Image (cartoon, rainbow over all chains, first blue to last red; front, top):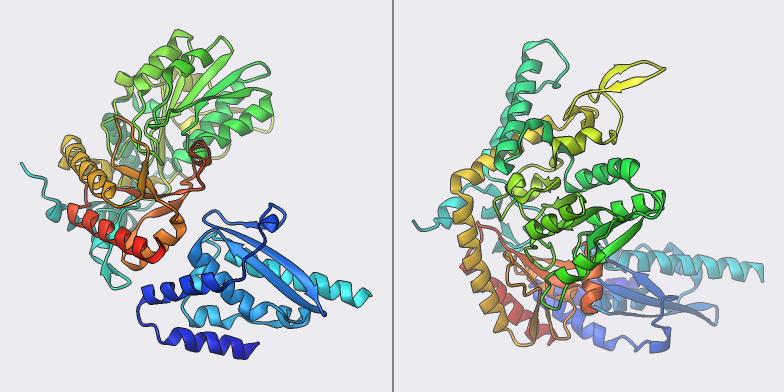
Length: 140
Length: 406
């Protein structure tokens, strides 16, 4: 999983201009698999004051598969990065991952509580899902 | 005489900085304004030369500090033309003022079957405190709607007024739409029912001249930080007879006359409403800010800001797919807008990297967004230190946004 983070860091290193970074995030947002609109309900909504994020977690072969979407494109681009790093992983891996890439590519401000774009809550929610599934699997 | 904006800008140290490599364009004045050197110096000098707790000591500094604080009160009195300094209560800001009034007024006058009237365009700060007190007292909240241009529907207001109404709480100027409300008419109509009116003046003080006696406002609230003064200081104006009748909001030092475990009697106005160590340094900074504005002249400020509003409106209208929310006949230099299909957060993020500070989101007025069935807007709120050149930069930035997301 850390290789993926390194990969993302390398991808962003080529951009000198902020707007190029944003353009890349816009590109990434288009690559995010489309979330079935039936899941875009309050049940899956992580409400930020500024933008909305929907997040769903399924267990596939003991790994967690995340699907997500956002109504803002830059947020959605960052969502796609989080999915790339954390989706299709074992719950313990997800819980233990330190998301260093966010800081390294200069997007830390997007995960600050003051931004309230839903991203910080999304990361917390992903880790909570991991904890929940881990607990559930241990009981079985 | 021309408005010498370049000279004025030199009074504001923050405006000379660069953000992400671009000279900052600060268009978030509705949230808070930048401070002129005159205010910053006043606050610094206070800490360096005068700081001592007010109304407490017999010593030299305390006396001097008290004197400065009371001079600040007199300055505010004069600025809003209150009849007496007993009517000027210092608070932490508009939110603090409204919460204090809602609590005290509610204790005295609200109960089951009574009503409070607010408007659909209120800031959350003039909604939630009333909702809380209504819930506590079993009173109900009534809401004056606004039309598509963002103007209050006065005919509906007249229908809401009744012998059940106990108070009307409306904003002088909308922070998300820029609308200047006909508060004088609202007050006149409410007074026919002997109903007092609180005016939320947070957005009005920096842009309009306020005469509380001419308005005949019963209560008027505003913040220092939105009128080029320091943070954490604000004012609740109230007519003396109204304030006299109300119970205090918070208990503590300075608001008391005599304290014993059996019974406490309260201090005179305005101290009855000023519990604890007040923000006396903030008050002197606010006085300096009001002096600063007076020196430039509100009329000149208003004329200049109007020309900025006209220019900005015209420029923004040329951006394809851009829609402005809030087109009242009377409005201040606030432009709330959306670009077709572009999320305000995305637009705001790009503008930020171009050095342009705007606000995105609901601006603490969710009911306004609900009215237009939108989730938020971009808001450029302009002040007298802004320039047409900065508006051009916003215009170019919005084209850039359109290229990226359109």
